[in-house]
Image (tube, rainbow, N blue to C red):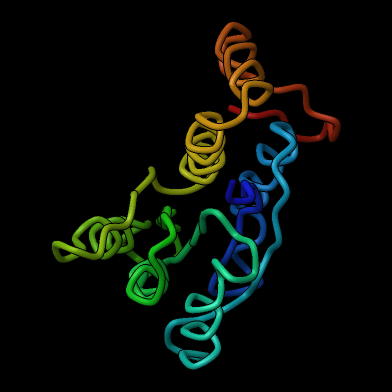
Length: 166
């Protein structure tokens, strides 16, 4: 039987995106999902971004969460180079407060899908939850954790008490 991959890649275009994408890390940790975080850019580091996406499956990843603002090409570029599920998180960072990023991520051509979440931290959290739901189909313990999460009103216990999930 093929080995079950459960590691998720969390990609953002800039270190300045870490505050928002940290919400996805928090939820991935809650669900016990292994992840690695990368800073890659569709515009500033296109060769590295393409290479990352082309080798992501061979490197043990099962899904990729990609957060991007403004033109927001990162999720689509990654999706064009891999057959792994890509989940896009639009980030507010422009005069349009993330609406431009939302449109860029959600309007992918047929054949190169990107699952698109809400703008900002809610989208980052939902991306992690969506990964948990995808992985839970093959992992009964993760399915139980999701059921518990829903029964708890979709709230998690936060170890950093400075910020609680909305």
